[in-house]
Length: 295
Image (cartoon, rainbow, N blue to C red; front, side, top):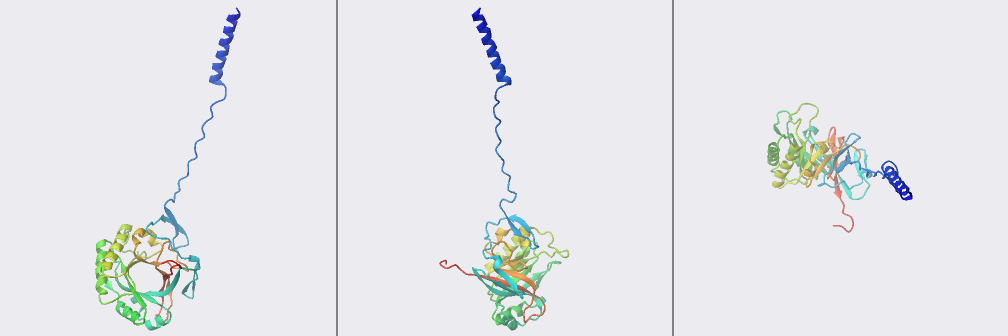
């Protein structure tokens, strides 16, 4: 009888344990999910000024180097740029075309201008014809006679690589009797204010046109470079393609805003210089100074 009671008691205990295991006891803890990192929407990009007081994010150009000079060490007083930082000295310059009319180059040189960029020619944005700047010869010869270093630029409206090659050949022909101190610059600009044949030209086409123009003129023995401006440089060029070119940046203001290294900064289009009637574009060239102990 006692054995039977113990057996029944053991069965009840086993049943209670089973029921407790199914409906009671301490539940297994729920694993805490690992936190998911929020993707960086600007990975591989840099924040740059847009030329209008704001900023934009653009893909980083791995082939270019960020601007090394201290932007906040620049100042502009009475149209003249000063740089109080380290690493560079400045040379003063202007860029001109037939719009400036007749220029007294001796007066320009006496005012402290060191170099001049002269428009050699241009392509029309309507019919696309090639044109020689009416005063490029007298401007080159006058500036060089006054002791200034001279470079030139061609105002491009090429809508294909073939047209850019045509512009390069035309430019080389115009310059065949001249020796330049500074590069020939490719200057491609959107018109913007009225319909033009260049409207809608792609980044790929503009970049390829620049590369072709510069390659052909380099083959003719000229130094070469590109003139462009903020914000167009970020919107209409593959920046990596500018590597190896001298860069002349249009960036109106009191300090150079272009994120990457450049050689010439055009900071005003309403400047005043003795020897020129009316407004003239003002530029400075950065002459880099090597740190002591470096080559």
